[in-house]
Image (cartoon, rainbow, N blue to C red; front, top):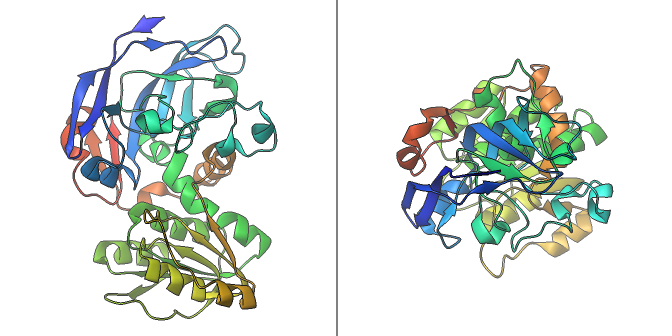
Length: 345
C-alpha cells in the first residue's frame, strides 16, 4: 500500500506549510495506517517551530486521535474504522523495556531524542500526525481504543500533554491520598493546567497554582485551585507541599519549587532545560529527603488511566482554554499563541 499524502511541514524556523510528503507505506505485517481526525499542538511544538530546535524539513504533530484505514495481516485487535489514540512515543510492546511497562524506553524503536512521531529524524523519522495518513508500527500494542462518546477535540489532547499533567500528580496522590499539591507554571502552558485538573480529579486536599499569566491563573481558579500571581525574581521558596510540579523553565524557578517540596515529598519538572548546566539545591534536597523526577510522560503506559478519567467525566481537557481551528488553517494557526491549539478535520 503506497499513497501520496499532504503533510504540515516545518521547513525552517518560523515557516510551516502544507507539502506533499513521501508515500505512506504499511510498516510491516504488524502495522497499520491511520487517518488523523484531530491533532493538538503540544507545549513544545510552538517553540520548536519558531526557534528551529530541530532542523527541518519534517512533518509536525504528535498528539492525535485517528481512524484506522488499513492494517497488516498480523494485526488482530484493531480493524479499519476503529477510532484510536496514538501515543506520541513509538514502542513495540515486546522488548525487555516494553515488557517492563517502560514503553518510552523501547529498545526496538529508537531516535536521538527518543522514538516519537512529529520530531523528524531526531525522533527516529516516524512521520508527523498533521498529515492525511500516518503509518503506525506494532498496531495491536500501540493503538489505544478511544471512547466513542468523547469529542475528537478532547481526545486529541490526551496522548502527550494531558497524560503529562496526570503523571505528575495522579500516581503520587494514589500513594498519598489527599496530599496538598503546588504547581508552578510559566514556560509550560497547558501541561501545568492539566496537572491542576488531574489533581482535583484525583482528590488532592488543596491545590495551589502559581503563574504570572492572567489567562492561566483564571483557568486554574476556575478548576478549583488557589492561585498566586507571581512576577519578577523567584522567592527562595513558596509554602511547602508534599507534591510539587515545576513548569517554570527557569533554573531559579526550579530551585524555588524544589525548596517548596515538603520533607520526603515528590517534585516533578515538566519544563525542558536546554542549557548544559542547571543547578539544583542538592544538599537541601538530600537533608529533607526530596525525590525529584524529570522526563517525558510515558504516553502508552499512562493513556489507559487518563482515558478512564476523561470517559468518567472526572477530568475535562476542554476546561483548559482551547483554541479549535479547522484543519486547512494549520499553517497559520501552528505559529500563533494559544494555551492549547487543536486542529480538527
